[in-house]
Amino acid sequence: MKTSAKVLLAGTCLTLCATASAGEVTIATVNNSDMIRMQRLSKTFEEQHPDIKLKWVVLEENVLRQRLTTDIATKGGQFDVLTIGMYEASLWGAKGWLQEMKDLPASYALDDVFPSVRDGLSVDGKLFALPFYAESSITYYRTDLFKAAGLTMPERPTWTQIAEFADKLTDKSKEQYGICLRGKAGWGENMALITTVANSFGGRWFDEQWKPQFDQPEWKNALTFYVNTMKKSGPPGASSNGFNENLALFNSGKCAIWVDASVAGSFVTDKSQSKVADSVGFTYAPHEKTDKGSAWLYSWALAIPTSAKNQTDAKAFTEWATSKEYAALVAEKDGVSNVPPGTRASTYTDAYKKAAPFANITLESLKAVTPKSPTLEPVPYVGIQLVTIPEFQAIGTSVGQQFSAALVGTATPDAALKNAQNSTERDMKRAGYPKK
Image (cartoon, rainbow, N blue to C red; front, top):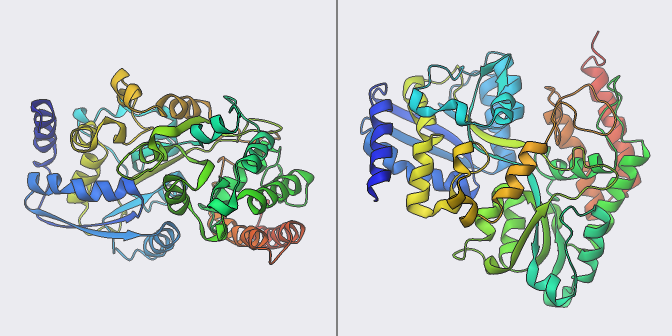
């Protein structure tokens, strides 16, 4: 290990070891590559804190959300550290279900964390989760395939242009698909992507009176476009594909274009896991009628439930795993391009930008997002690819199932939209919207 990294990590121990007490910390996290890396590198934390043992529960995204929601709502206390997003941090923090992240050591440098990320994890100025990484959505594409076909990717493409490129670059006889997009049902799976498509077509989830908008032409245009494009140029079995599955398809050389989370940048350029690492281009997420809400804002963050059995040691771990010192450890062990992106200004050094060709697109996309004004027409909610109300988790998943059915072909886009409109109207009425 380099001396500078040793000094940084030693500083972490001086800060955190003093506050840690003996015990086991149970961490619930998602099965993506960054979190698997965190689990692997956490051996360093355990070496620094010999009285703390980490126990990991690693789950698929939809399953993780279900388990965490059930546990925290019932005060089950199964987990000491939760991997959650801005949606849960906002709602659960307001309910008093999460510990406030306060009294952070000066070495943590909270001011280094981007304000938009801090705000997204806060309620009334109180921070309820520490960001592990933050992301927007961007477009990945194969520069070699574009060059061979005589195509040029615009800096800010429209969805119409993306569909045209995808059609020209599809050769199903070679298992080469023009586009890969999320199809797996879930409010944080297919609906994250489809909502940004709808936003860019001028759509919105609800009008200012909380009336669902799936019966409006913008949603019809967006969902019909998505389904037709995927059927024409997408891979088979797309209704089973989320982030991880599409990442695997892209890295194996089977996708010409992929629109998804900016955090994938370090994985598609990693020669140890990507066959196309030397021929990946990056640009902004597609827009259409508007660029408002065309790219999402999300953060995977670490939080401590008030029901946690070992809050002291949990705090030590969350501070370590989201610190500048952890970033230095990643850079030392796995290379600077793999440092968790999107959270800290200090990450975006010249060295990082040189090693990570996706860095500027990610940074500019994160700066441009407006969760409090996410759509072309005004809305009563906060959130770009989600709606920050308690009911959205169930409603979003239900709508995601309808849209996945349209992708499979068991329902037409029109039928899926009608079902989504009816079920969402019913759920919102049952929940008492519009609120008096």
